[in-house]
Length: 400
Image (cartoon, rainbow, N blue to C red; front, side, top):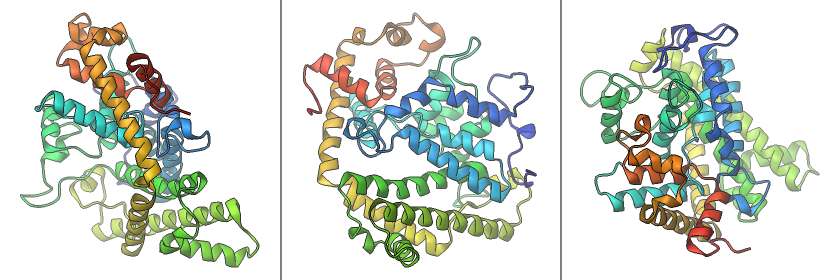
């Protein structure tokens, strides 16, 4: 496929933190994707919560299946836009590597633990942790920590960043992946610079994937009913369309076909709206993309419908009493793990305690005990965190 002039070309990459010779048969972005797929953090995603905790059912989505779905949607749209599919896929597969066990409940609990332990702490945010995983926590190669990914992949992973955290990253890497969060396009008051189109696309594909597939998991769980979803026009429109085409269709097949049509409509909408947006500003290079407005987008109408769906899921699924009950228990597990490890770090494997007692000099610089504990907990799967909690606290967090 011929890349558009505004696509990221691996031949023009800003490179890796540690220079390496090019691979003979793969581009730099393909190599990034392969390193992510072979990483330990990627394998852990199979037992990390998306919405429903891992023990609640074998067919609910996990962080791994979600990441694969984001990558598939991203590649489909990237191909139509003539931007770099391999880069979109790499970002999509890596975007959740820093997620804690138990999803956002675990993240919130770990963030609170860090700030309660040290008011000056930067806290915990999974985007930053994903970057931390690929930059330093993975230990696979003899010459450096992390995966040594390209600038472009790392830029896409860091989709959110506070000014405070951006300043910390900028101090270590001047002009690097956090630089855009510290500057505006031209002068004060204008939006900050943008990442590549590939990074923008991975971000929107993430939203499309979880909105659609959380409907599926919500109905599978029994917490959502098809009749409830009639109030969401984006869903009800395609349910009516499906019923007109297949009057006798019902049950799971009706749900699956409705979601398929809804996903297809959103994909084609992004392609059309983005094509118009790019033509409207006449961008001719990656640098021009970074200096302009966001370009990967829905149409105004689709963006509004997508927001209604997101608000529906927040109210009726993510804040459902049964979901809240399990997430409260999950937060307690994370809090008690943090307290236990801070009180007795030797309960962690030596490879982790070495990071803050100075034995491993290459890793110990700047690592405070609470950050090492947070890294260890964040790397756990749901079921390992549950087992560790039972071992340390002597209580089952999620009785059968």
